[in-house]
Length: 89
Image (tube, rainbow, N blue to C red; front, side):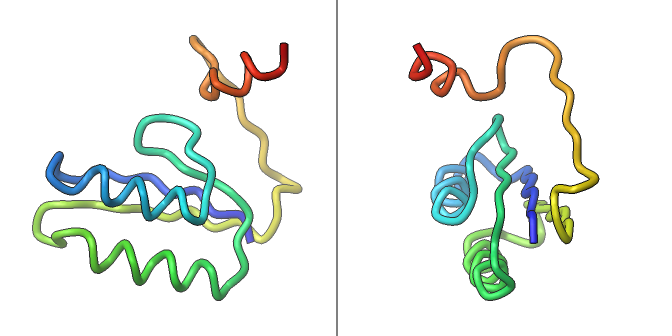
């Protein structure tokens, strides 16, 4: 499955949530990660994130797609993955 993770967490926990997300997904923008995961990996990701956040203060949203077949993205402004742009050259 293809997973897009979006989070809005307190600054005290943002680094921890980002680290957990990066273990499983690619960081594409501030507070946005995405990538292909198995159901077991997705379950682990959700479990780790749920332990890292404060449900009274933080919000994490997962968008799940069975495949990327119908997914398309458009971007405006700066490229969302500038580190990849430079490595291409």
